Length: 262
Image (spheres, rainbow, N blue to C red):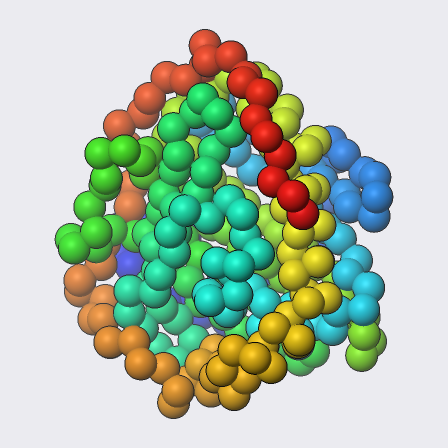
């Protein structure tokens, strides 16, 4: 989202996000293997804004289940091995909230975090979840984190019948740092496909997990269940990248890390 005023995305914003998910104009395919395709825009060294799009057909995972997986914050803490901390801050409407998410970056880069306004919308048998960065006075930038900026990031889930779906992830992010070339290459060729595979695996295991963890609790489907406090839009402002420190990590060399077991 652009502009100076925080706004809840309308139907036009969701339609625009869907169109960009489906479009290949201006996107360069950087990886296509194992059923996962990755496109990039502007992932050159020194470019401040990084755009990446991944698409995968998820077999044996319905669109409805994938929608639940991507919403369920308790389940995310289980399957998302990149997450450091994630929590919901408050609700705005029945289909919009504000939340915090921090994640591990490849060593020796500093870890990143974001505060985002997230909104979601079922469109027929398809679903969209998308977000953009906002500021909240109670959640300032942390000393040990680089505050990144989500210009627009999200997922589109398209039903492919009762037991399959196509998942598209699209991120338009300013990581607030001059990143080294190896990070850029690793993101599109390795990290993004690996993340998609983890989401698919999480989808396969979700129904069994949910049966044992508050199975009826799905506030993204039943907003009357939410216990989040309401936040007025007046408490939020747009997070502009220019107001955040831009760190130079371009000279950092890659270090060997122990891989997380999938």
